[in-house]
Image (cartoon, rainbow, N blue to C red):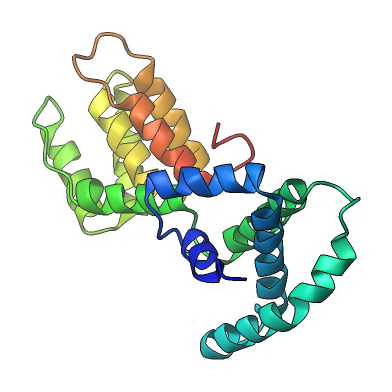
Length: 215
């Protein structure tokens, strides 16, 4: 059980890319190490209901006391340890996904906060209406901003700025399906010099996380 700190660093995403690749290789090539990862995850699963501090101590206690039992239960003639470890890792990260944001959602949130929290104003034929919508957006009044931009689009379906801004308002308010519809309309336009439609689609999928969105 000498690899506990190493496995703990892997689970907490504290390893470098090279170390992560080496970790994966060891699971596939070293049955003993794969077995140890399985022990780790089994013990951590048993301890997950404890509070943060209690969990840490409880986990280490279970880990040390239950490892011989788990090892005997697995036996050398059952499925390869790599398969057992892989299944347990899948279960563990599935549990994590239900309890905290995924890495992709964190990345999306960070991008939105850094680049889309406040929007500049584009002057065009409907400058006053666009400006009003952007003012609402920058005040984080996304529902009213969406209505303002959608009103522009209804009267001028070719106003791609309004389509983009409507989609961004919907993205920020969690209306991911509506946001995707607008970003698809935007992405379909080939006349734009710079078209962020597909990028915003990807950003929205990272937030929505429905079946197939990752792909």
